[in-house]
Length: 366
Image 1 (tube, rainbow, N blue to C red):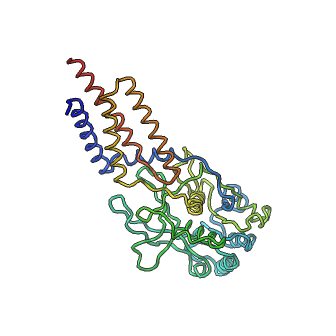
Image 2 (cartoon, rainbow, N blue to C red):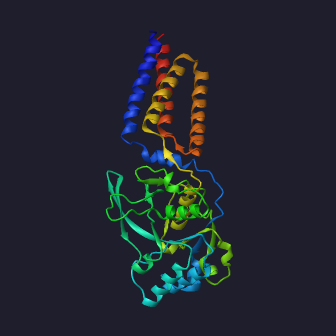
Image 3 (cartoon, rainbow, N blue to C red):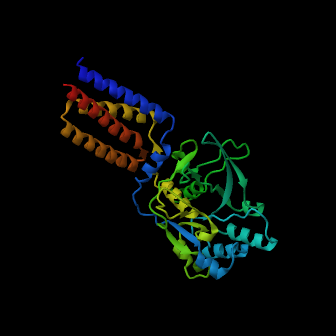
């Protein structure tokens, strides 16, 4: 075997082994997450998902938060049975006055379906969620007339929200589903479509949100305008209506993959999760074996190109390889597969530098 080929294969093997081991340890995971965040492209929001926002305008008009439960009841009475489902992302974990609780329960009962939030406790072991259990739930009067869904989101090690727990697990009492999944199912069944939980794609019980764009992408109406009747109830006919806080001082906002420095309200995160489910546009990391295969294949190809092609054309081919792989990762992302970007880029650079130095010293000695 020619010495040049032997040296190239040896270098490619060492590089592949080193980066494969590094990949298996989870090194650069936060870098990879940030890199994949750059793949989101703006898409049109579904017109059947709308938000009624508890915003600064509403708080100034109605009064200090939290509001009396009769206020929430009056909003639901205004909506009547127009929406196909209402996701009311406001917690009611403790009793209020008997009359106000009864009025809110009656208002919920007269809607087609209202989903109230469950706060869950997420138990994490070695960075992975091992248990999701309910810890805060609506009072019994409201539980009797509403459905419930987990409203927790899951942030990565970089504090960026990308996932939601699709359902509870290791919970002996009952199986709870995420707020967004309950609402999506209601909408789909009402429109003669199959139950989305049958095709739901998760990783360890977590669903990655396929964000449609930056914050404030969904149609939104101020709570007070609906409450006062300025926005007619017909606006929400057969839609999924999400009611939740968007006022900054209520602190229900998070940094997401598409925040670009501007936090997204929790209720809009739920809207993005619902659209992910309705459009069946799930995101899944590529398999481990696919990432390892890419590392080895790219290392060997780059090393052989650098060994046998003149340096200027070889440099051009490596640059084209980088561009081609990035295009491939964008196309894969659009089809629901998140390709590893960081390690292939390291492979291109490391293989190029290693073989360029090898060629320089061999030619120098000659």
